[in-house]
Image (tube, rainbow, N blue to C red; front, top):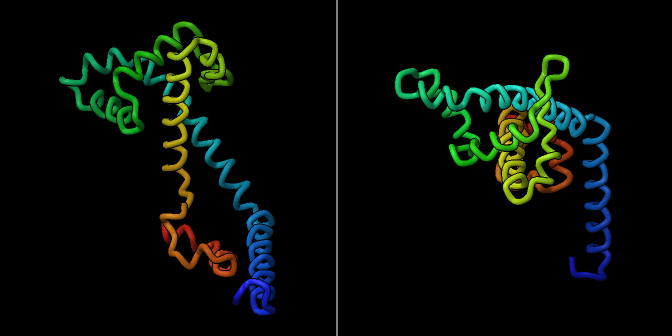
Length: 168
């Protein structure tokens, strides 16, 4: 209804209440918590594998024309936006700040790269983008473009929230 009318007041308040229920259901169901934890786990695994790939990147390039497995490894890196220029920049950061292996898992401690100027920041952003890309692929999180329009309504979001993964 028109602003200031009883219909507008009623529908506006009803929508506010429904949106509150939608958010509360998301919190109570632990969906947001679960999603962020699973993405963090996927990023941790990717970080470990990433260090291994970067350490053997030059060998992979040398073998790439003769061995399909090496080509596959290079393609994995390229698939997340890391080409030769990006890898070289990351390798420089690895030389300045070598990754540490803790409990059998590589830890890059990328925050140290931010003190290395523009190249360190660029390397940091490239790796972060790659890790986020892998996490998003590993743990499907429906976005606005993945859901039907009616799911932007709080009532339908509340009713169908567990069906959203079927749309992805």
